[in-house]
Image (cartoon, rainbow, N blue to C red; front, side, top):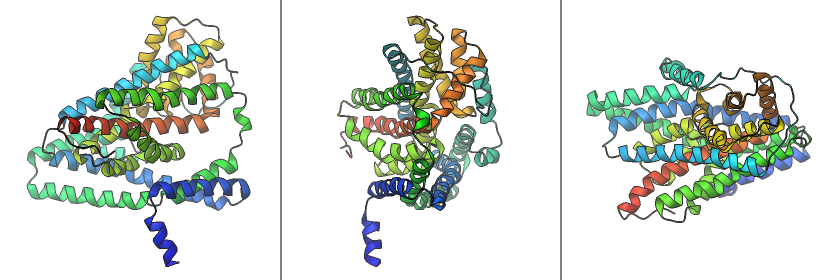
Length: 408
């Protein structure tokens, strides 16, 4: 038994996650009645979601309070990368929708929430989340509010806190980070439970009618993840981007795919940044910021679903309208975290620019929820892995200028 434990502890986390993935799939096929395995996935996702808001709050405060300066330029670069990649993803989604037009059978169904009326509603929601009570923001996982209060408190501590207090903040940050490492160490068991649940309960027949739409969505996201994002990284670093791209997809995207939660994946991304040797003062702010505004997958979903609705109804989409749609999808996607229901509930806002009424738009949203098992998983994977990808790119850019060797 000790030998088995030793081998297990000496195996890399990625290999252990892959073992959990394979075992979960096999058990889901061969023993679907073993429903007790579902609790492993629920506990893992619950633990990540529970610790993530506190981690972000503590890390951002500690990082800003103890920051030595010199990271402002990196923030401007990473924000440009986040926004630029999201806009490019929306443009690619428009192009793919023109090249491979899809008609969908509209359906009815309860989507569980009301969509925002427009960009004004999104901005009002974001502003409301910013000023939410910080304790309530942490308990409700409102990352817009968590990040806003943490930044303000961090800057205040930097200006007025004593050296001893700043050291105490760093100690608290280190302790919370250690708890996160313990939770992430349980990822293989959590992935086993999540994959078992998906395989044992979700058949493929439900996706047959909407297969072309799902293929267009996944194909577009794959193009963004494997072509456009690497192109952005390659042009920024003047280096082969794929070692970094594949590392982010492997060590962040896989976990995000199965948890289907960018919030739950924040600790995973933080741990990956640490393994890459990035500056903690930088990534402790840029990662939660990316979970708020880096939304390539959401931009693809909003754009493709809206174009599919217009195509189904025979509405012609001009070049100018397509560009406006891309910009609207980018702004809407960046506000996804402030809207209950995520990217799907922003579809009616985009549909409104083509004169598609809300009743029909909500039927499109219902179609989105039908295929969301795969759509949302892919969307979360590309969004969350991109947070690490562009955070690392912004910092590696400075490393290259300074003549430092990259860890890839």
